[in-house]
Amino acid sequence: MSIQQLNTQAKTAISLFLLFVITATISSVILLGLELSGEKAGFNIPTVSQIQNKYTMPSIVSAMKGSMYKEVTDDADIDTVHNWIKEGAKKEGKVYDDAWKIIQNDCANCHSKTSKMSRAIPSMPFDTYEQVLTHTEAGYSWSKMSKQAHIHMFGISTFLILISVMFAYTTYKESVRSVLIIASFGGAFLDIFSWWFSKFIPELVYLIFAMGGIMVSSILLMSVLILANIWKKEG
Amino acid sequence: MKKFSSIVLASVILVGTSAFAAGIATLESVKGTPASMDASDAAWAKAKAVTVVLDQTPYVPEGYKGMLKSNAVIQSLYDDKNIYVKYQYDDPTLSVDRMPWEKQADGSWKQLKAPDQTGHDNTYYEDKAAIYWNISTKGFDKKGCAVACHLTKEGMNNGFADSSAGRKYTNNPGEFLDMWHWKGVRTGLSFDQTHDQFVDSTNDPKLSKEWGRKGDEQTKGGYKNNINDAKTAPAFMNKDAKDNAVGSIKEDNKVPFVDTFKAGDRIPGAIVTQHDGSAGDIATKAVWKDGKWTLVFKRPLVTTHPKSAEQDVQFNDLKKSYFFAVSAFDNSQINHVYHDGAIELRFK
Image 1 (tube, chains in turn orange, blue):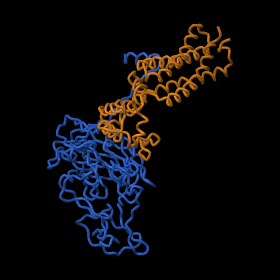
Image 2: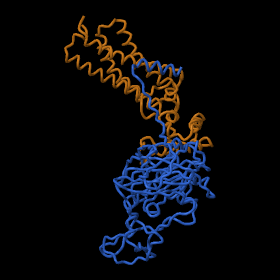
Image 3: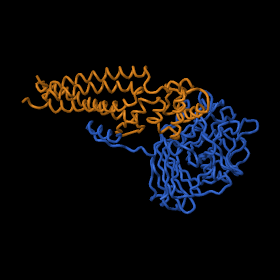
Image 4: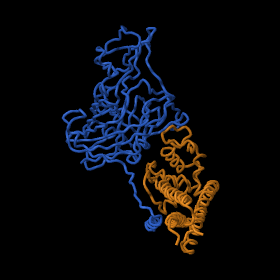
């Protein structure tokens, strides 16, 4: 049996579903690029250093280097905040005073429970030392990782199984089908695995980059190949 | 490796890339001398325009009915002595009633005010506009006005109790911004003049009640509240009632208030005097028409007052870039619409 044997309505539904998947996949890469680069528009391919910032640095430092960079008064301010965190993020000393002043000047106008600015983020306040402290842990916390991992794994696996089964019933060579199916699931698993452990093994950011690329490309490739195959007349 | 990886990823995802540079806008100031301060002067035809969307606000006044977004169009000319800036922006309503007095049905007088939660008026006020120029403030070229914006949080600003929505001050001693503050009812329409101000790092209200925002040096100029000693009615009125149209009373035109008015009649709430000295450097012709304010500013390229170095941006090197940012106040005392980042001005 092959997907070419399906009736026209089923083929139409599958084709439309795949167009949704292709659009959603490209959108997710655009979103990731925007978040990591701090740009407001365009297709920004994430770089290894941006990924490194996101998964291995304290989230406040990562944001100052990435999505919030435009709010940073001076590049040296990022180092000041990072040094404060590296020295234990204590509520004392000159390094704390300097870092606190930077955070209040560059971040807390929007990051405040009481902010009414156009871009206010009252849900993530930096009004107190304790509030800022929650953003000083390097990489993903257990809580954030658990949340991110289960959302992504449930979501990705749900549409991946659909695409994989469809692809399995195309008329391409068995080896091509097997490689792409394994690559898509394997890439997704290793990508998410590396999010978590790159805080302990920084070199894993290269795995995030590579596996993310493999996952995205295999999803797109399978989708395009299915579309090309499904409307072919049976040989 | 980074570049290679990017190229590989770009290839495998089968999507063409189109990077958009999110740089700041650049305004070219071109050589030319307008024959007049009229915005339609032929000299402006050769000046390229930069358009900026003003869609940020520092706070939300209770019951605010003013604009939350505006489009600004900016042009610039210069000659051997002066720089000219034409700043046009959308403002659907003309507002020239700055806390006026109104005669009540029972014959008494009431000064109309409607302060918001921060004690500032957004109902009986004037339209204003501001241009900030960087003199020596780190981060302004990247962040624009936001670098000097310090919001009050839970009634505290820099450790001091404060009821305002926020304060302007720079982050470090020695950092200055030049502020061209056009105030419609006060010196704006009365004297075709912008109040030339500046911002420094004063972050203690005991040192200055306006914190870092200060007027340039002057011997006279500004405004005072038009109120009698008993605080029950205006003290003065315009010699010629036609002058009420701009919402103020010039010092030279004032005559003692004599009540021959009927209920509902209004008397301006401000007595105004032209700024001299450094505070009066900027001539400004402003016209509101068809939902837009058009302001033409003229200032010497270089000013030579005793404190010009810290109060005025000096356009003394025409090969340099100068960074500025604009904002607009719709019938509002402190709430304003502004844009992210700074605009670069280059002389051509």
